[in-house]
Each structure stands twice: as C-alpha cells, then as structure tokens.
Image: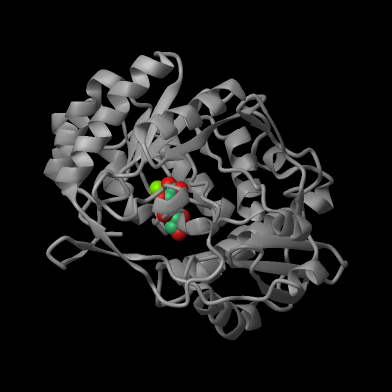
Length: 405
Ligand code: KDG
Ligand code: MG
C-alpha cells in the first residue's frame, strides 16, 4: 500500500487550520492536523517543498520508519514547523492503518484503559462574579473540572477572557498584524488569589479547578503564586513560568505543593525530559499536532509514566478536530491519563468542514468507534473559507519592555 498523493488544505472557518490528506494506491486516505497558530503558511511550505516529495511511493504501513526518516533522517531536527509537518503525516498514517485494519486507532495502541475521557471546560469573565457564574453553568452541565480565567482590573485585555476584555485569540478569524497587550504582575496577583478564594467558597470542594498563567511569571513569582493558591487545591497550575531552562521548575517545585502542568508549545520529548525525569511537573500538556503526532505522544506518555507524570493534552481551539480525535484515541488508551482540555467545536462553519464522531456527555468525552481516527474532512466546504493571515498578540510590561505572551 503505497503513498500515492498528499494534499495540504488551509481553511479559515473562524480561524486557520492546516489539514493534510494522505491518499494511498489502494484508495484509502488518512487525515492529519498541521496547524501552527500564526505560522500556518510556513508549515505548508515545509510540507509541500521538503516533506511530501520524499514520501511519494513509500509503504504507508511503515509509520515508525517514516517518522524516523523525517526526524532522525534530517540534519535540522526539532522545531514547531518541522514537528507539525511530521505530526500531520503521522496522524494521517495512523488513520489509514486503522481504516485498513477496520479498527479505531485506540485499539491499535493497546485498547481501552477507561470508558470515557474526563474534560475540563473554560470559564471566564470580565469580573470574578461573571467567571464564577460561567463556572457554575459548566458544573450544572456535568463538568467535573473547570479552568478559571478572569479579566485583570487595570489591564485592557487579559488572556483567556471573552467579551470586551477579549483575548480569546483562538476564536479570532483574522488579525493581519500582531496586537500589543500590556502585562502587570502585581495587578494579576491581586486578581488571581481573590478569584480562587471566591471560587472555593462558591463552588465547593468537589469541582476540580485549574488555571493557566500563560508563562507570564518568573520562576520565583510562580513559586509564590503556587504557595498562595495551595489552600484552594488546584488540579494544576498551567504554564506558571517559561521552562526553556527546565531547571527553573526546580525552584517552583521546592516551594509549593500546587501541582504543575506545562508542555503545549513543546515539540519533542527533549523539551520536557528534565521536567519529567526530575518530577518537577505533574502533568505534561503536549499536543499531537505540535510534538510529532501520535507516535511521539505515545513515546512521551510512556516515558512520563515512569515518573508519575500524567498526560493532559492541549485542547485549545487552534488545534483542529483531527488533532482532538488523535488525543481522544491516545487518552482512551494511555495508562497515565490526567485530563483533556476542551472548549467544544461550536462553530457552524467548522462543523461543516470537519465531521467528527466522538460524543460529549456530563463533562466526559467518548471516543469514536469508527475505523481510524473517526474524522471526515469536506474539501468543497473548506474551499468556501480561505486562509486569512492572522497573528497571536505580543505582550509588553507597563514600561514598554517585551514580555512573554
Ligand atoms: O495558539 C496559542 C494557544 O493554543 C494557547 O494560548 C492556548 O494556552 C492555551 C491553552 O491552554 O489552551
Ligand atoms: Mg495554556
């Protein structure tokens, strides 16, 4: 079964997605997600000019060899663009293998370790009151875990918040140049501690609470925040600090028992090897699209299992339903599963392009039993929503210095 053709589509049903379709000589096809938010066309060029020509005529069954060929075989390793291209091919090949075997991908990975996948929803608002009202809605819809993000008073926009203070970047169709935002750590500290204090007294102790710092703090500030949030018993504090220098997390870990999660921007196991093997984190949040596909996430998860670190894949809306399906199969199989981030796929045009078969009930998702990944892609519908250049924002401190967005 040879790889005969590989097509790349860029569509913008509310935001851009790069979708790869691998077709074999037997007429079976598989889908992969190669979306890198704000860098979509770079992945397209990588695929079309540098990856696809090398794959035509290869045996589509040899997923591992093709992964190694694209990773180990290439002198220029790692990096988001390269790894997203590898990831999309890898997902498509798993999809093909499942279709040929007549089995859903989780069966090829080793079968079910659980009946359903626990999700966490996003609650946000322009005030603590609004955020907690939104959280209560999720809880009454059956969610057992909720991420809380609230607008920081005194800042014009806050990451993760909808409405006037909106920086819910993922849902925005087109930002032809990067918007600039202001960040203030002291203003944030005042808000975030108050948010969780009120959340526990209003929501009780049974709901799991999470929060994304989005890498805005230094390691010692993160350590302090972790300590201040200990009374409110978070499931995890996400991206407390940048970990380009992985030993930064040693500092945070030494000071707090608040569980730590990181990994959505990571591209390989090497980016989180020290974090995992030193048990400086509790959850690894890699995404199949950005860290080399199903083959690579399986390897990262197995490595993490040795060190009591659980898989909690990234689930932002800039990952397409194809990536979400890949996560659903991994989460259903993986022994060391933590939780899956979930914001839903409510957008009408998105659902016109991607038809996917998992179900959500009471804050749990249930994997598709269709052979392969269980996602369909409507090429004609995709053509109706062409690519629009769009950037993530950039962030500055109040004195104008560049900061982490
Ligand atoms: O493209 C960037 C987003 O995927 C990211 O900002 C979302 O932090 C995020 C999250 O936790 O979902
Ligand atoms: Mg995040």
